[in-house]
Amino acid sequence: MKTFIITIALLLPGCTVKQPMPIQTPPVQRPCTEKANNQEPYYPAKAFALHIEGDVTATYTADENGRIKTVMILKAEPENVFEREVKTAVMKWCVERNSTITQTFKFRLNGVKSD
Image (cartoon, rainbow, N blue to C red; front, side, top):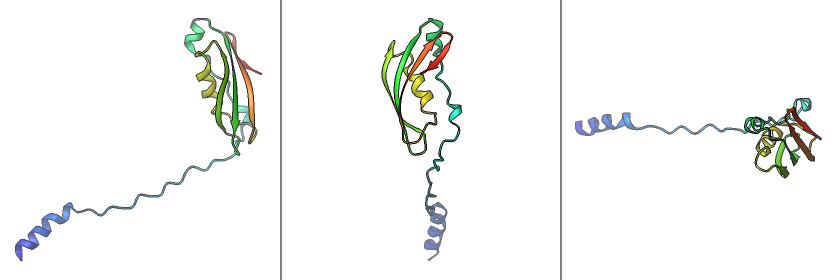
């Protein structure tokens, strides 16, 4: 009997009760309200240092809150220079809800402009 009690006493501290994981709810998506804060893409430092200019045409689609859900590059000249910066910038934008927009970004050494 003593052996049984001692065995139980030694095993109990190692036993744990698993606590249920708390339920995590996804963050609430609020409608975009600050459309004026859409920042133009950055000029890639390497392209600027090499004096490379170019154009990127992209189409992007907004969801029911005005947030961008997809960005597709339609044309880039030169290729593989400015596309990443366009995608990064546009994915942070707020635009008209449930819209699809096609836009050309002109990367010039004196700044980035868009149509």
